[in-house]
Length: 291
Image (cartoon, rainbow, N blue to C red):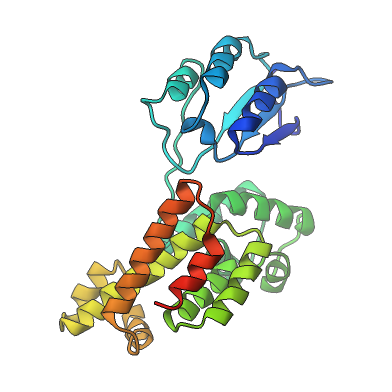
């Protein structure tokens, strides 16, 4: 009997030391019918793995009980040259889920509308628009939030207020954070950052959003100083709605190209550090506010 919805899911920390636990779990048949999923999240197993763990994988993967499933997810493409990836690919299937760009509001709206139908939900148009802004392209959060809404709705149509009461809009907070950094308001940035982290917003998601904002601001400011036509600036900044350019110009009036460039470079460096496992997130954001 294969895996069925409702079978147990065991989540394992994304640390190399936890991999033996995952192997033991997936090798054990669960009580009752069906199988179980052992989920290694943001698998560092793709990048850092001892020879002992690789040997254990090679020894046990072909013996995993048929009902069970070992699921390894990662934000980055596995390095096919590494020993552990070569070992896994002998027994595994790889599936990629390309991320819709955060600026592609139409693409995100279509994704959310499809997910709403999958969860048998009925929302007023304003509620769907709110989800586009609140969740954006975070597909993992989308599934969990819509599951919550489906439990609450019990087949009833949900109004905007219902959705707002159940789902926080962290993207608005990220917008506020971007403005606080741009305006050198370290105290405000620290407060917003604390709120985002308490609400379990992932640091990489926050940084990706900030990079998007400062990239757009830098292109806009540089385009204005170079006296480029509006349509050219809109194209370079990849604005899905050219009317947004008017507001962007207002937002960058009091900030220099040099400052925007320094902040953008610092954010890209911070993203690289986070991806390599260096966790200096909050102090670095506060420091960036002083640039």
